Length: 215
Ligand code: GRF
Image 1: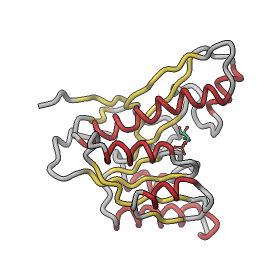
Image 2: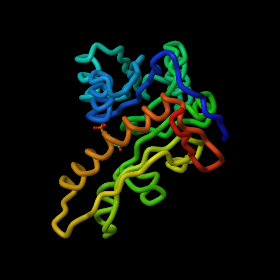
Image 3: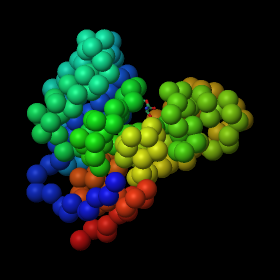
């Protein structure tokens, strides 16, 4: 996959956000936009679980949100094609997986090649492809973990890395204290990555993500 820097935009970037749970990363995006820190609009939030707190967060912010449950579609691909269609219809520039618990099909990744990013709660490539990467890192006994924002490719949690933040694991760490530390870093890192993308400052060169300096 390769991509050229897009350069500064005249219009705010349109985001499509995929969520499955609490939506604290979505909230960080909403807050950054409200505070003028991020020049973007959330065009559409898609959630796959009806009870997810993320839905309330989107609604409270007055953002269009659609529930798209896997079980309402005959196949995984049909489900994801429907999601891709909704994002295309909403003219989304960038898809953000902000706590999305399903692996995206190659067809969907292809359609948005170089325009999908994901936040993962570990320092990839360690603890990639896992739903419980925070607990897994703690149980493994690593002393440093963190989070990663990366472009999404066909291979799970293996796409070009945009940015990472490290978190120290102390002797007293519990899954709860570690999750709190990682989430704080995630919120900062995800907003920063979207900002860099929206400013046209990221481009993909093979497995590497390079940054242009501000013009
Ligand atoms: C985050 O830890 C993210 O890295 C992982 O799922 C969690 C989502 O948290 N993929 P939230 O829904 O944004 O609060």
